[in-house]
Image (cartoon, rainbow, N blue to C red; front, side, top):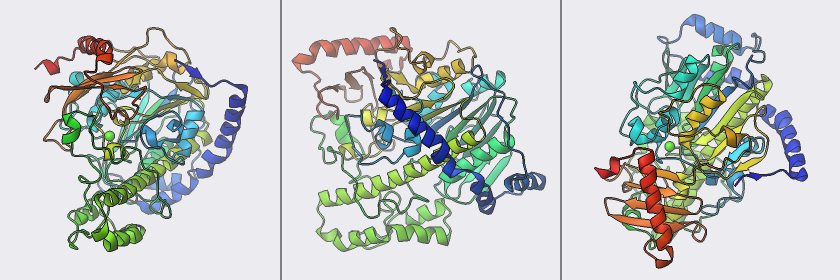
Length: 573
Ligand SMILES: [Ca+2]
């Protein structure tokens, strides 16, 4: 299963890339400029940050501080940064483009910095979430337990304060911990020496950040602000004599994909369409026909597509004011956004009456996927800044950097956006681990791994005990390039947020092996079975076909075994 890319030519290529990467590209985005810009753009809440602190920040930002020397950490207690970007799907990462057999095939990479992390470390091609939606995925990350065990089954629950999470365990074992960016779990973040998080999903512009010391109003694009906050903690809050663990979570590319610096990308070109953009679900069960996550019909003109005038009525689009208010856009920010979309919107207004449903879907798809990739490019730029900082501070070699999405996302496959499904686009998460001191460059791993494994893996890497209640498995052997014979042969999946909740995707559970996906929709009492070897896009269920009778039964048995193993009795109720 292990695919080691060890040819002499490839290693030579990696060395060249690493060299270029570390000496030129990371460092081309040094943080020195950011220090100055940062002070111009931050408005502090006077109640939350003292003048003394502010003065200290100014001194530091003017470059009067001595930067931290290399941390006293080692392979035994490495630093750890987890980047768990919201809805960042594998189809939009260059490092995954050559192996994914389904979905959108981009003609370029929007993620050069993340790609370089993959080239310098290990990328997991078969990493999957247990429950493809934001809050549940984050609760699984923190607890190493499935949703039915950690209590966050849907986006409707908050994480219990009674749960012990891996950051708490690291804290008890000498780590300094921080949580920056999207938290989303409702209750106050626990187990962190410092946190600075968005309220809920947070806006794309001008967020109020909730910190350990009170609220802070920030001005600017949230993707940049999250990096600025993280680097501020690294510079001013970190104790160099302790190993640190920081969760650095971008809000992007979560809906509604409102770009900042990259607003004008892709102005002069159209992007490729996935082969299933116009698929009619004819090979799928009832659930696919009943969802409400279509680009063509579900997306709103204002909030999703940034079209201020409804082209069907000529009236202002519902929600345009909401977009402005929720982002607290200044006149200047709003004007820049309006200008960026003006030409394409004008085309829509002028041609709407003559456009077929197919034409309209094509137009909406281009608007959507361009915005998605714009906010991805912004995330990638910020990852580059973070890595440049680590490099400059001599921290890159002994810091484990994990890059992941909290689930996958549809980029027009089946005509859809959003996630939730056991289908590949949604269930697969990008997962890349970079650690020069501990992981060889250029490993491509195909073992079945899950977000469930991250907590035990991090604890294992930090040399602490893994509690028995954690249901994932340490991936450390895989990071070393080993291929344990008893590694899992099947991934268990469940999704609980059925209709009438947003997007109306039926509740389901199932199993994915290296070749098949079997899924059950209990509310319809229907099944789907996909043979990924012949149907990587999962558009033709073979459930009930005689040729698959044996494998179908084996997979049903496997679901029973996995439900027993994980003690998931929620479907019996
Ligand atoms: Ca998400």
